[in-house]
Amino acid sequence: MTIHVNWTAKDLDEGISNMMLGAKADYERFHTSNGKKEIVSGSYGDIQLKEYDSNTKVSFGKKFIKVVQERSVFAFIVKEDTDKFKKGDILKAAGYNAPAQNAARGNVLTGNYYINWTGPLYMDSQRRLR
Image (cartoon, rainbow, N blue to C red):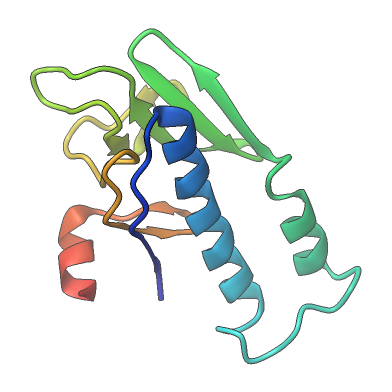
């Protein structure tokens, strides 16, 4: 199951925050078996959820914003319109320092995309989930 992020944002910071709120909600759903069980205080899941926000780091490059969750790249966000992408487009990582530039997975400014705690989904996957 995935989270549908349907919030629009007035700027990239708000959009990234919305994206990570969706990812955190999916992470909580993962640890509670879709709400069927409670998270035990002091458990691994409890600790991870409490540290989720502080484990998210955002760094600004020339063309992209890199979002890192713990030690893995969660996503890259396009800073300005290009020939291929719009400002706010979400890209998966090709490596730690470069995005995959095959297709956007959604847009943090316009919303209406699906996300897992492991990262943004391909648009084709999103269409199948609707």
